[in-house]
Amino acid sequence: MIVLASGSASRRAMLKAAGVAFTAIPPALDERALEASLEGAAPPAVALALAEAKAQAVAAGQPDALVLGSDSLVVVEGQRFDKPASRQAAEAHLSHFSGRTMELHSAAALVRDGAVVWRHAAVARLQVRPLTDAFIDHYLDREWPAIGGCVGAFRIEGPGVQLFDSVDGDHFTILGMPLLPVLGALRDQGVLPA
Image (tube, rainbow, N blue to C red; front, side, top):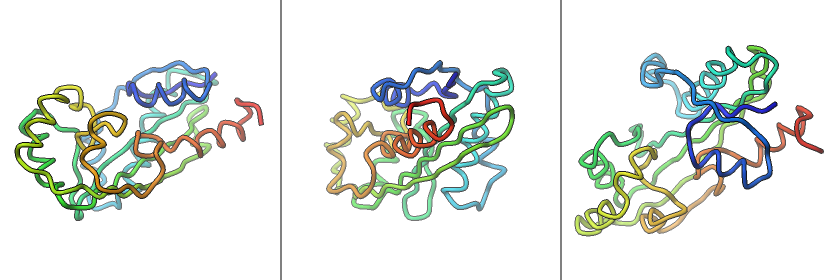
């Protein structure tokens, strides 16, 4: 049995579209406290630690299950950004991102019986085009509050694609989980046909 340790609609949709049977259980985890304990760690290490912690939190109540945890974070010019807590925060994030390169780090981990059996981190680089105040207002009128749960304040599969001039990286990583390596790991674990 595969358990997705996430409440993310995007991660659920990716697995479903790929034909993976799973159960989703959101983890009870204080992500901000864990992030604070990792102050100074490199972004891929933080994303991996969060993915593993999510999987571990759910695995504790799911003996014998293979639990998949995943996490994403955004870094722009060395500053890490969390999900925007308000429309005003989303506006501030987008203003800061304007004309800069956004690094989106996504990580995934598989846990079985309390042990991490696989982990992977990936990065995508997205060039944010110069954004006018008028565009940001129009964009948030359309997308808020739906993007409140999205790191980077965008959904690449929707109007958020208009934020960017170019993208260098895997589409699934941008959606929030390095899906192709995850599928390979699930095959290696014998839960998907090889």
